[in-house]
Image (tube, rainbow, N blue to C red; front, side, top):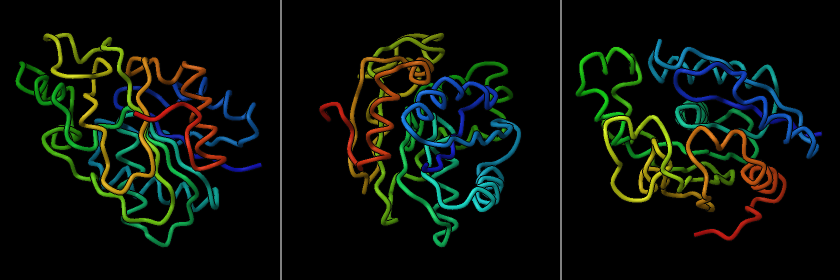
Length: 207
């Protein structure tokens, strides 16, 4: 059985990853949820905690949703010696986040974003240089909190725009008709994640 470390997104507890974890475990993986205070501390602090958590688990694949993907990228780039398998990002805004920047302009917006605010201004981890395969899943159903202040330009999942998910050096990217948070409940997303972790490619057609 192969180990998988899951990292959740901003404002939510690690339990939100449980539906995806259950499907991955049904596919033969052993899942470990990494929980952290998304808006409470800077990305570097989360990455260091994740690296320590991963050392305790041993060699593992990584799956991150939204901010969790950034935490994974930062941890693996800071610790090139950290043993890792394949990596999958789900709706992760590696090239900044239009909806995050827009939220920050409203009263109280910066407070809600907390220590994560700087991440949405520009991409920090948009290049992948490790040898492990990196796969990206992007949503195209525009339903999410990012639309509270109006529609988002271009193809998006309601929070993150398609163009914000591209990583230089990624092995493959697919776009699926799911919304940002609904990725964690989607059987189709889980099937593709399991396929990439097992074989290094998604089961759906990439585009």
